[in-house]
Amino acid sequence: MAVTGFRRSVVALTVLIATAVVAILVVVSHVLLSRVTDADAHDLARTRTEAVAANVTVKGGRVVLTENGSEALDEVAWVYADRRLIDGNVPASVVRRVHELVDSGRSQTATVGDSLLYARTVPVDGHHVMVVVRVDLTPYETSEQRSLTLSLILGGLTIVLAGGVAHLVVRRALRVVHEMAALADDWGHHEPGRRFNLGVPRDEFGELGQTLDRLLERVDNALADERRLTDEIAHELRTPLTVLRGEAQLAQLSGDPVPPEAVLSEVDRLDAAITTILRAARARTDEGTRCDLRTATRQAIGGRAVEVDVPAKIEVAVAPDVAVSLLSPLVENGLRHARTRVWITARSQGAAVVVDVLDDGPGFDPSDVERVFEAGVTGGDGFGLGLPVVRRIAASAGAEVRAIADGRGHVEVTLPAAGAVT
Image (cartoon, rainbow, N blue to C red):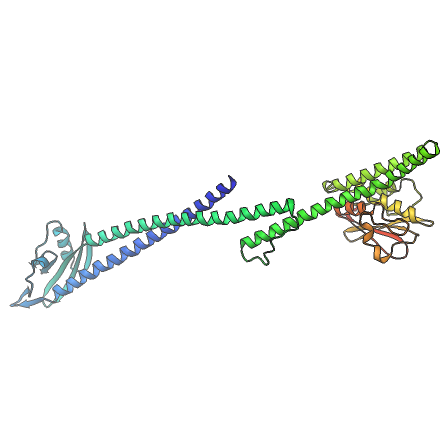
């Protein structure tokens, strides 16, 4: 229905524009034709006047007209000498207006009904001579009416043709769009790696293909992200479940009860992993939030032996629980691999706040600084637990996390600053 409505709108707009253009052309052509016929009528009147004036002469002191034996000419041309008709028959319908033209004593034109009257003075020694001719305007008006009628008919046909062409063109264009959209939808469900690959856009369809390619790319990335999330969940939950299973099997073999501390520790670890993953999934909805960095850092430490060198009253533009979820796995990794100490520092850097989580352990190998954020990848004594989720939370919250190979355990987290509190 939406496609049909769009098609109707385009066709209606095309018809409206065509109607306006045709109307303007008809009016302009009619005005121009009227001026041309008017000029032709005046030219004919002047020609007749000159022909009659050429035959005016004086004989025996009287003004006479020579070589006028046409009765038809007498009905359209009249000669007055000293305000007295000497040649022609003036019809009663125009006689009053003809006399007014003669009495005026000057050359001029006048329109009476369907007739054009043209009066012209003729220089004759000692006499006031004026020639008046009539031109019937009916043929000219008939020609104008026929031209106007023909223009309206052609204009109407043009409007209908424009509407028909617009309908066909839009229908064809929308069919192409529909087919491309259907293909993109099918690829998004079954073959997200497929692309139109139309190259540099040369028309609107090329731009549509490029847009759909970007959409498919986002769908493909979303599916890949979903797979990564599944891997991260499996990675985060497998370790505590394995520990619990090992404790249970050991208790079964030894006949001793499972230590409650071990069970509670691993259950807490499961709960923390699940909470962290949920926060990563919801981090994009926490817009417009902020938190105090020092407070969030202390919550992430949770009373463990970690040194904190975070300036007071520095706020970051992330939710408090998100900041805690970012730092907690990093603190846990640092405590696992440190020899003697773990410490956290923070510094402002333009519109961001950089937090460094450091330990005096062996640190990262330069070849592993990126791979440690992949789910299931471990190195050394097992670093990597929780790091994929940390990067996911950072990306969702508009932050950035990276491992630094500088001979010690060093992870740098860049958070958007919310401004210092005064």
